[in-house]
Length: 481
Image (cartoon, rainbow, N blue to C red; front, side, top):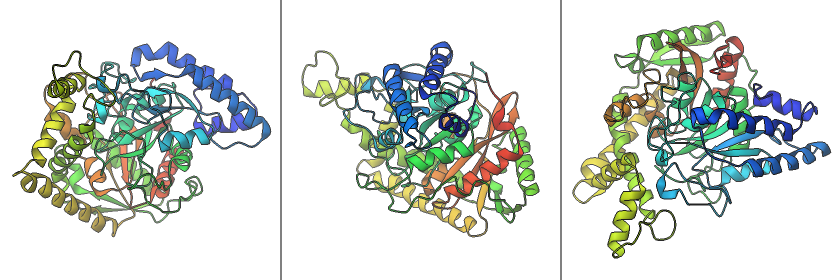
């Protein structure tokens, strides 16, 4: 059962081929037998999952159920879930049990989904490898000596190994698309504001966006049907009707205009990945698409811009973790200042401290105009490049990452080299556009992702493109284990 897609499992539940309880027990067994090897989960909610499955079976028996009713999923451990630890992969929140549900978690509860647990992640979503987690690194199922990507590495591995049929992730600078690419699954970052951020612990508030991580584009469409929508509690949520993302999956791609940015195919790109991307584009030509070269001339500015803006926002967002109201507090503080200082020094890991320091410096008196304001000006130019390119084509395609997954620990002492791995994803977040990664081949037996970038609120087109590609290829069917 656990090798099936979400769409197939939904049909099986509907047709009474198996029960949600049986399905949930199968996934829990997979977690119990496999997760010691991969470390994809921080918390497994077995008792709650079985109770939810029992409720789902009763609902399915009445015929009054939804497509996700009874489907076992997992949440990245920065979505607040009532009564369950929400740690953000940090010692700072190791003892924090959320008293409420995030909007995303609540939407899945209302849809009748079964929550298996909370997945591992880079601490406060700061990282590209899931190595900065307080709970230890997650390992790539294709090679356990390599990283799975980050920060949503736990969710990616859970899906890739059959420990969950789907999972939620978040993407601030590529944290859904990059681990999806490294683990050989499908991941989509929706348009900024399409999915509510309420109850999602913030890293970079103008960049963070939640999205689904699944085996296929069809499964992602089913998940996004639940996740997307306006939320009055989120001031950045966009009040715009939500389409049925599954409605146009079978639409042919005849006449689709695909743009290939010349800046995505420079010296930074692994030659074998470039070959796979061009082969994937050829497949789209067979499906009726036309190809055009476009330019995104400020692509190289996305890394310096992002690594000013995101740490600046992180500096502000993480100031609330001070040892006073909730979270970690140091032992035997001498006074208030000592409590603040030691609680933060002991509670945050090295990467989080590094980004807080960078952000605080960029926002400090005398440097705000030189750094933060300038980065925001560059952000607008990067967005303008995308707007101009998407006026000529329907979607932009290219690599999700410049290289395949690297060895665990290989970049820990060189954070800049890890930052450079985000060159193809950061600009999409800076512009607020939707982006998706789908499997398109292998380099040295490690998965490679094709990135598809669309216009604002054009997620349905991206999912249609991904679905048609997956009908024509079988890269997404390859299993790591």
